[in-house]
Image (cartoon, rainbow, N blue to C red):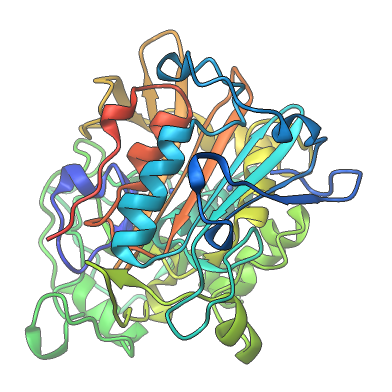
Length: 433
């Protein structure tokens, strides 16, 4: 998948079905303000503890109080925004109870949104998670980076086929492959030939021990000293190096920080006010869970500012539903043309998926198709966290799944495939030692 800074080094297959800062399209967003008051109710079906499970909806929820017909559950007879009880049971038993993590799932269709919440912020803070809880979204950040690129292309500021050396200092030696130069499009589609990460980003050369103070000088040094692994534009090689470099180049071109660039061009337009890189004290204390791996709380590395475009953003289910609404055409803004460009397939991809669909890569998005249904998705994962966003444009349905658990504990990408009705419940995965 395209997507994640996974310092536990999952396989490429895992990474591309999830995303880290690495993640996946990971290829892992919703309506600006739906009219009406949000309704919140606690569910006790199948004896789910009310303290760890709640639902909020931006549509009428009177039907939720009625007993759900479970007879056809295996064939997904429920309406799209009704999560099957077997899936709820999986989330509670295999994710929340075993990983001690919190999970929030948001669903959107033309009739509105619904958010399901499971678990609490942390062991010390038993505040239940909800649609406004902030999660690390890791490589889903990449879709922000590539949407900024598409928007700058639409405004004539840059071109997809521009060689990247055009936007870098003259003293930076940009690698080529037998004379073929890296372009902005190559960075946005993971076809640059750059390796997964810069070789000098690890503390004491210990792979996995990320240097959060990694800076521009070191990034340029790494670029100058890198030998490309393939000819640009010919092979899909997931690269946080490349996507981080793209975010840096675009921010330098505009003369603002990367997070301000995303805020100006995307977040402010869509009203995504809780999507950010830097959290306030109150955010950290009351709205930001602790990451978990194998049932234990762990410390998550900070993504260096200079490669923030690869996976530094945090967001909420409510905000990502706004993002999905724009991507699905349920919300029309001045970003519409840029989003359309971003969704266009650029290259075939090589990731694997439970449905055995053919895979392609757009600008930052993973595109899956059986040549009848097209799904766009992206996963984001980093130590102790993983998230996924996915949607089917033709059906105008989408899903956001956010978890303060490691991708080795539960794969939100596969969960979303199930919730989008692309595959059966046997694709749900949770792994615990």
